[in-house]
Amino acid sequence: MTSDNKNMLLAIALSVIVLVGWNYFYAVPEAQRARQQAQTQQQAQPNGTPQAPGSVPAGSSVLPQPSGAEAVTAPGTAPAPAAQTREAALAASPRVVIDTPKIAGSLSLKGGRIDDIALKGYRETVDPRSPNIILFSPSGGPNAYFAEFGWVAGAPGTALPTADTVWTADRDRLTAQAPVTLTWSNGQGLTFRRQIAVDDTAMFTVTDSVENTSGNPASLFHYGRVFREGKPVTQGYYILHEGLIGVLGDKGLQEITYDTLDKEAEPAGNGRAKAWRGVTGGFLGITDKYWAAALVPDQTMPFDGRFSTNSGNGPRFYQADMLGQAQPLAAGATVQSTTRLFAGAKEVSAIDAYKDAYNIKNFDLMIDWGWFYFITKPMFWLIDHSYKLVGNFGIAILVVTVIIKTLFFPLANKSYASMAKMKAVQPEMLAIRDRYADDKVKQQQELMALYKREKINPVAGCWPVLLQIPVFFALYKVLFITIEMRHAPFYGWIRDLAAPDPTSIFNLFGLLPFAVPAFLLIGVWPILMGITMFVQMKMNPEPTDPVQKTMFTWMPIVFTFMLASFPAGLVIYWTWNNLLSIAQQWFIMKKNGVKVELFDNLKGMFGGKAGA
Image (tube, rainbow, N blue to C red; front, side):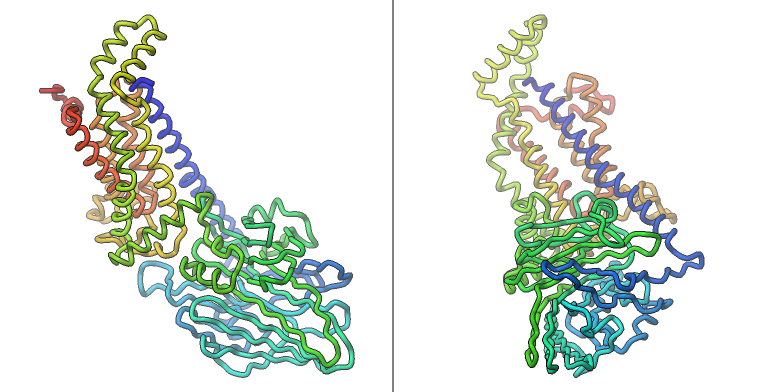
């Protein structure tokens, strides 16, 4: 392969990456966000007040039918009457306060639901005065989102607690040190108890028990569900899953987006659903980019799991639910079922700790590490441990870049040395082309003989680019999905490494008093990245083909505009990596006695005479 052809292949490959990357990471997400915002506005009432939450039609089953049961009906699930605000919805029922180091909120005694959770350690913006992230909200207010547990009767006639049941609590405060027990009697000899415990982070343990003091046996199925009203505005990125998620036993990881559930799931009752029968182990719930709510059943007992949504003209809801096996309840006996609920931030350390502590099947897949899990998670581990040493995620990224460059140093050295040899024999290559201009076969034979004689690998120069691509995307994934990078500052104006550089050359980086449209936010770091990419390309001889020369000239500009919308941490990585590559290439070229073309190329660009 000739040097020109090699350059052309690299140019084409990089151009394809640019086009695909722009489409997946910017153009498509922007269009999706615009459509979702329009949809949200259409669903709002004319006066701007959110519509009343939807309800599950009376008598409809929102849970999978267990195998072998002929008539299993769900408890009442209709939400409370609509309230104007979240605060009014909270005030509509008696409550038990939830107070842990990381969670503030309450659980409703009406229905016994966990429906009010705010995350103490996370705010909506980098401003420390901005509101805390709200995860759960009660039914009856806007954007209802909650977890509910209970029992389904195996036969009609058994009075069970419903969404309107008011439980009695043994204390008014739930903490990590003190669980709360709720009690309700159906007046027919069945006493229901629900003990709710929570740890220091984000895991609730719900233990439901039923004592039968009547003379009649019963059969009960325990259920749990995570219910979300309304389709949330998602990030819309191809590499990030948001929506329904679960690991359903040997069925493995299941990720279903809101749109997929709406359009492609099997028709079921008054909506659509995707169900799994008799699976053992795993979890199921609903995930956002940084937060999630997931049910964790007993990992040794079979259960039925389902993702579902409604249809029709009413407000949309989404639900992940699970139903256990039938539990016979003899007269004078007690049955019990324990389910866990994860409701909080998807911190890597916490997710991994829960996976190990409770032996939850593939619980670490709650975080969307992607197909290249084997690269992405080690990349996070390396950055996180570097951060613990240096105290700044931006510096940690720089340190990790040096580590990666060191690991690939021998291969990169061979690559750059081969490129240097290619430059050294450039006159001979040109002579061969001139000598056999009319005989392409002979020309290629002579070039290959030259490569063999000089021990040159003509494609070795591709390796640095090829090696950088998976590292680049792994780092992009880490910066994009892990909450540890959210609102992580660097220095100066970079207050969030997971967000784009907020400055723009079009208002002189904030010196001019006007806001710049998002598509014109070409900040300092993207410009520095473009400059380093330009310098790196100008260290090599200019392509002889004018088309290739034009492509290579414009490529740094295209990358500057494209990466301007990427997380600042990724742009900082690329800039630093370019600087290290420039230094490494310069050293190797000098060591091999090959001229560095940088200054001659720059003189040629600005009207000077090359070699002057």
